[in-house]
Image 1 (cartoon, rainbow, N blue to C red):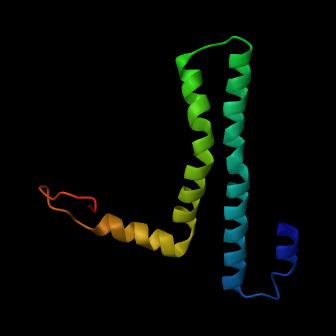
Image 2: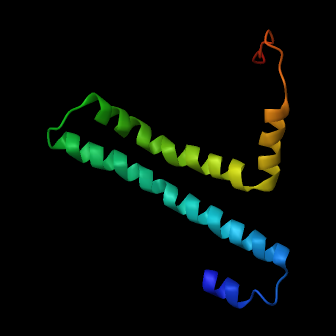
Image 3: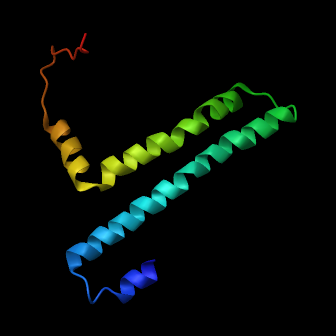
Length: 104
């Protein structure tokens, strides 16, 4: 894909080229995120063979949640509208005594 994109670089605009490169980067990170599930599988195999440890149980429990968290973080970090939204949230200055309440 990258080779084809570089080959056609002279026919597309620089803005589209950046967009395509960003999309390839995001898709690569999204595709790699399920690898974290293998840590849970390896831990489960270790437990089947008799190795028991509290931290191993935690890894088995948490490993399936990592791809979900990573995919959302990648979207927030690399996509411009989401990145601008997060930066705007950082600029909001709450007074020290302010409380954030959930909707009832």
